[in-house]
Length: 255
Ligand code: ADP
Ligand code: MG
Image (cartoon, rainbow, N blue to C red):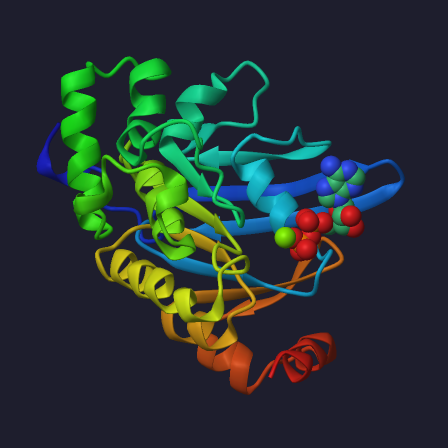
């Protein structure tokens, strides 16, 4: 190839994740109604919207915990919604953290973090433990590695769950209302950690009711309504001059 015909860098590189026309129906209820979403590498996308608008279902679909009724999901160009895909391999590339901590109570904090790497992804135990300790250090839990989940505060448990989601070095992580079950005084430490991960360039999709936090961390805010993204844009736009009446009503209720 000569210099002239080397392809130029694409002007709009493909987003890391592209969801197209996602449709999910539970019984007769259409929960995702042709939803499109793009997430660029290093981007922090925040999902806001009323209860029942489809935020959790969207995150669960992205992690292949729900089967789509229509649409497709491309991760780094690969169609991960293809039913033949290896879901475990996808989940190593897209981590997820839920509202309730979901740590295994009978395993130490360290073993919670190494479980999937060792059992599912066949990482040698010595290496898995080394990586888990490094990740626990990163979330400020180096000292707690040998403890049981119930010896930790709710905020510490949630940080352990985040370490577990990050230990496979996923391409992105999904966080579903990760502070909603916490006592108010423990919310801050988890949000501080998320802010730090964002500043380190972690690609994230966060569903949250914490509007101040959303405004601070989001590169892009998506307002969900009835299973679609009704409006999206930079936080300054969504929070100060939303175009849609429904967004304005939602924000008025939240403040
Ligand atoms: P959000 O997270 O925005 O509150 P959800 O995605 O949890 O919204 O829920 C959207 C709608 O889908 C709600 O009406 C909810 O009751 C319904 N739903 C979610 N999961 C299921 C399920 N497994 N079976 C039936 N209905 C469900
Ligand atoms: Mg939800």
